[in-house]
Image 1 (cartoon, rainbow, N blue to C red):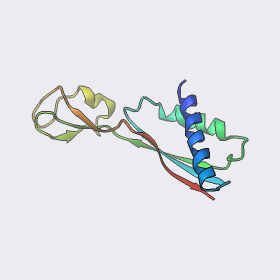
Image 2: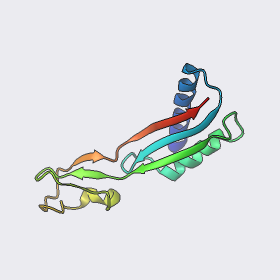
Image 3: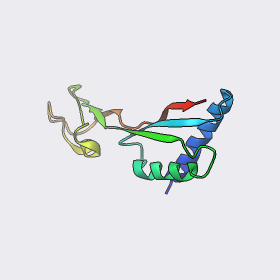
Image 4: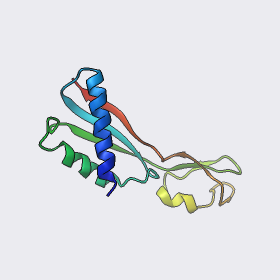
Amino acid sequence: MHEMAIAQNILDIVREEMAARQCTRLARIGLECGALSGVEPESLRLSLEALLAGGPWADASLELHIIPLRLRCFSCGTEFGGEYGQDALWQPCPQCGEQFGHTVEQGKELRISHLEAS
């Protein structure tokens, strides 16, 4: 389960940011996780909650926003995919029928979107 290692890395980044801003209390972590990020969102949530439990940030809450997949057709430029999830990678363009070469416009993200700390 590589989500535990990712969760630890996220908390390392949080710790660095809080130290740089001389904060000691963490209230909230906001994360964005794309459909193609290679991360199972619920496993990441459970890993973060396990690492936060019993520590100085045990009261911190987690906001996890899933970013849907969005593709741009190589042939006609039509954007599509959010409604199909990851399966859209194998779907033809709804406008022109092109099946290959689509560009991933959104859905690979895995980032800390915001922190609330004092």
